Length: 148
Image 1 (tube, one colour):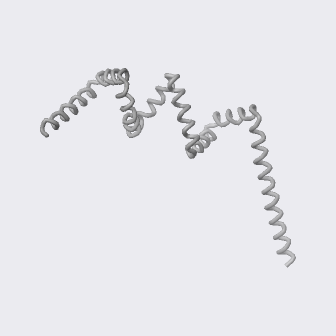
Image 2 (cartoon, one colour; image 1 turned 135 degrees about the vertical axis):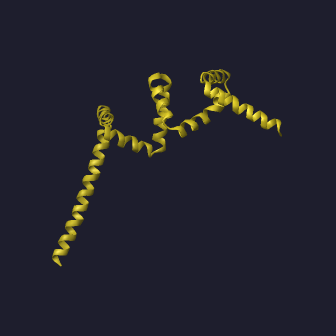
Image 3 (cartoon, helix red, strand yellow; image 1 turned 90 degrees about the vertical axis):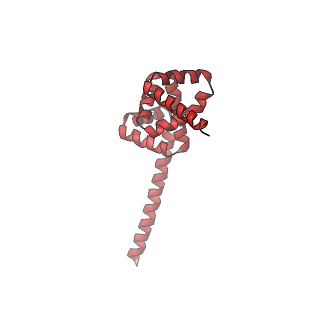
C-alpha cells in the first residue's frame, strides 16, 4: 500500500513539475520574442532553414488570417517587382485549373476598363491560334443566335 501511495505521490509531483516547467518555458519564449533583435534572429533562422521554413508556411496555410496576409504581401510585392511577378505567373501556369480560375476572376475587371480590354485584345491577337479559336467561338455563337 505504501508503495502505491509513494508511486501516486511521485507521479503527481512529476506532473506538477513538468507542467510548471512547460509554462515557464512557454513564457520564456514569449518574453524572448518581445525583443526585436530576438524576433529578427528567429525569423532569419526560419527563412534560412528550409525544413523550418516549410513548417512555418504550412502553419500559415492552416490559418485563414495568416494566409490572407501572406497572399496580400505577395501580390503587393509582385506589383512592384517584375521578377517576382514573372515567377508568380510561371507558377500559376503550372496549374491549369488555377489559371482558368484566375482568368475567370480577371475577366470582369478587364471588361470594366477600356484600357485593360484593349490591352487584353492586343495580347490575344498576338497568339494566332487563340485569336482563331475566339473567332470560331464567336461565329458559332452568332450561328446559334440566327437559328433561334
